[in-house]
Picture (tube, rainbow, N blue to C red):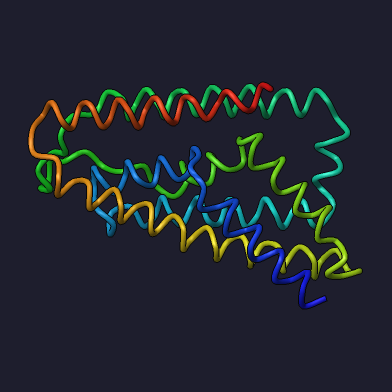
Amino acid sequence: MPDLLVSLVVFAVVATATPGGATTLAAASGAQFGFARSIPLIGGIAIGLASLTAMAGGGLGTVVQSVPTLQMGVRIAGSVYLLWLAWTIGRLGAPAPRTGAASSPMGFFNGLLLLWLSPKGWTMAIAAASAYSGLSDDPVRLAILLGAVFGSTATLSLTLWCMGGQWLSCVLKTEVQWRAVNVALGLLLAASVVPMWR
């Protein structure tokens, strides 16, 4: 049992730290708005992932897996949402001065929605629930455990990605550099849609 728990934590760290839509969005938000103003987005993504894995551990994952039209709906909605986010990021220039007229970062709800509409997130949550179901016979306990592990690791990894984005904002000096980085981040986010359709 302890080995299985360690395996779950390692899986969660790898799943949440590797580049993808959520990490790209956290880095872009850190670059544009800094860490402090990105905390609601990070919280929304982490709670979105925690709730998704908890629901999968509690049994909802099998429902989603067994209804092809629901799977397709999540895939389409997730793809459209990610492409909209990619377009939004790709159009950004240098950050506005951090005064009253500055644009605002994507908030908690955007982060939550990103995960709930992510076929990659659903697939990962269902895989985790299936692979680590041996940790508890009680679906409620399994849901709480999965949610806690994935929520914690997501918070840590997204914080690091966001701080990396904030560091990037110290390096970029010109409008052209900012445009290039934002276009690159937007393209990376758009590219994260491709695996959903394989």
